[in-house]
Image 1 (tube, rainbow, N blue to C red):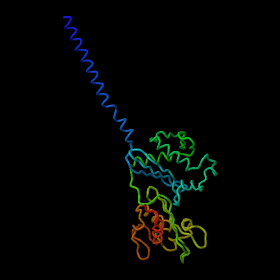
Image 2: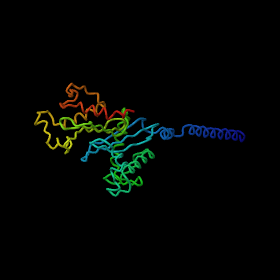
Image 3: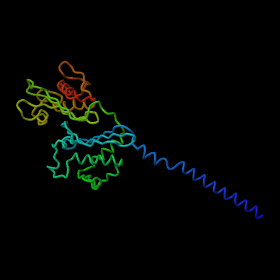
Length: 291
């Protein structure tokens, strides 16, 4: 009996040890793969992301471009675009034409602070890390940043929620073209464009007069051009010009509108003015913008 008890005890101990070894091997084979996979692959779909805000009372709108590779944000461009088109806020800041240090006594220029915020997001890969400390949108999360970042967080959230977008065919930047001489009417037309993520995001078609004074849009908005009153047009010049600008932003192609012999088009609803000069200037401005 004593011998039999010893044998049974030995069998039981071997069985327990085998069971423990089996569980240990099973656990080692599946060490929480989800956490490791997410960290390695990232959490965003590869591609380019873009978002913009509405124009504010100063005629500026915020814009952000993000690029994602292997699931991670690799670079960010946060800026603002003027309704008058041309160079964006970051470019104006870099060339000293914004002057936040000089005018606002800031510790550094706007573009320098914006770049710190962009770098912070790339490092953290998490917008929640950029915590706001007040309703105005300031943060203590990034050293050396005193500008409001609420617009940035809103735009990034919007861009990531919308998903990747196709980049346009143009090189990012500001583009300008103007006529060489004044027409018999006394006006000379010009066009300014802003391109982000390869697409035209702001357009300004305007005219200057040989006698000086206000530009054509300013003059028209003040009621001093009077196309509706004098020529019985369906809209004022600036209203029709803005519809032509919106058409270009939608189509992204200055050749999208078929022109008649007199320079008008049926392609843009509510536009009866001659738009030939506009589209010719856009083509000229974009001549060196192709990627």
